[in-house]
Amino acid sequence: MRALLGGAAALFFATPAMAASGEAVNPWVAVAYLVSGVLFILALRGLSSPESSRRGNRFGMIGMLIAVVTTLVTHDIASLPEIGVAIAIGGAIGFVIARRIPMTDMPQLVAAFHSLVGMAAVLVGIAAYLNPGAFNILDAAGEILVVSRIELGLGVAIGAITFSGSVIAFLKLNGNMSGAPIMLPGRHVINLGVLAGIIGLTAYFAVLPTVETAMVFWIIVALAFVIGFLLIIPIGGADMPVVVSMLNSYSGWAAAAMGFTLGNTAMIITGALVGSSGAILSYIMCKAMNRSFISVIAGGFGADSGPSEGAEKIDRPWKRGSAEDAAYMMKQAENVIIVPGYGMAVAQAQHALREMGDMLKEEGVSVKYAIHPVAGRMPGHMNVLLAEANVPYDEVFELEDINSEFAQADVAFVIGANDVVNPAAKTDKGSPIYGMPVFDVDKAKTIFFIKRSMGGVGYAGVDNEVFYMDQTMMLLSDAKKMCEDIVKSL
Amino acid sequence: MDFISILSIFVMACFVGYYVVWSVTPALHTPLMAVTNAISSVIIVGALIAAAAGSQADGGQTAKWLGLVGVVLASVNIFGGFAVTERMLAMYKKKERK
Image 1 (cartoon, chains in turn cyan, purple):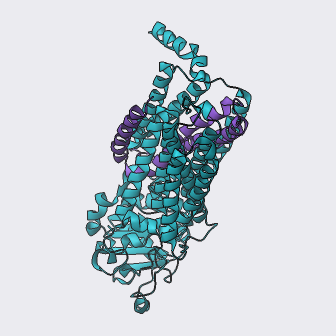
Image 2 (image 1 turned 90 degrees about the vertical axis):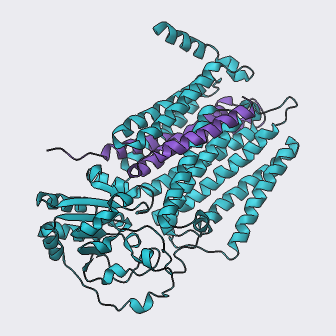
Image 3 (image 1 turned 180 degrees about the vertical axis):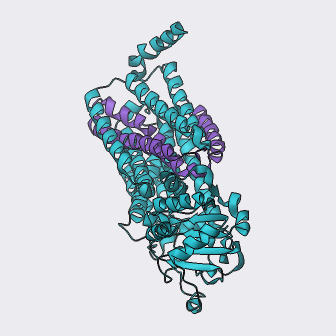
């Protein structure tokens, strides 16, 4: 066994010069990249359950290490110290950010990371265009191969879209920019025009002789940066889970396009994995909102939330509850289902909420958490926050698994969620959220609804029938403060 | 490798990705995004090639610097992405059996 490994290693390391010259490709190099691609598949596979997830993450790290080391040992490195410094700088920054970032800011962080992948793809694409020899994409006549040009054009375009789109998503999620949609007049025409321009120019770029392509190439890059920006500004805050997933997908396709250029299996496999992952997440998010992907991309949701039917309902009677009421009722209850939403994240209420849950459990109350797929600003956002607050993951349930239990629940405790519990989605055909799967909290015996004030309505801008129901008590306060008050009263 | 074999790998990988991602539990969708972010930074391979090549051709010097910047960006993502995923996954705990 050892001899075999030794032999493999010798073969692997003995021929760097060969690969660098670009003519003969050491088969072990291809195998190494393939192995790292497979390890990336295993990394995602591990996420099928929390128990196997950490091992999966390790596989991912090993895969990355193999890819980087293979690249370094099989190329003539003219500048190893510089590369070492570059990795050290980037690694240190990444590591510190990863340690310090609060879990509530995860959507922003992921958007920021997407932008980096996009930018890296653009840089690699430009570098390959400027120095095609190093990337082995020249034909016998010294021209960049036609197929490589298409890949390059598409790669830098997708990378640039990912970058500028993610920057906008980051600014919106981070609150540097209003979450409200920004609607340019005639934006669909502009966007389609720019997209058509990028595709047309890529085709033109592919057929031109190399010397004349410079201008076209840079225009593609510039247009792609612009379109990424234009695509995301009209999309409102509530649709951010879809946008973040979509940009995740784009960053994958960008990596795949570069993988084609380099003929690198690790990059192609990864790109395909990440691309499909983002696409599936976007699909899940759209389905959970009963919206088509096209309508999300077209943007504007939440902007035209005119007080159409909501206006005359504003003065309807509702009951206000106190922390003591909530504490008393929940202590008496047999089972309580907690429905957290983005408001919980904003108020950083997850720890206080868990404390409340723990005290109820000590009283013998069964406590479950119900999470809607689009709760929060990115897929799975609420699960991470609850996990951070030490809520065991087997007390946390998905929409379809728990929805039937509301009918038997003594208390539904809604904290920072709104649209996902709005029965209008089931009954009111005119409602913008009609058809969206929602929690049947209206079937619970008692509903506590934490909300900062009666004024604001959810992101979809629709009034919620649940506020005015007989069994509902509104707890008007900051979510965190309310949970703490309830804990005190228990 | 010729274009068709690369394309075959790509298409197969898309299918693998499709089935693997559907099997990911929704509770781990945020770590999924973080880890896909980290692995898509395998694009560092391209940046390393550009940075390593140096000034063999006219554009080589510029390409090298672009590559180095690419290496920095991708490294932020690799280290940050894996570390933050690890941090999140460490938080997922089962109910303590009493």
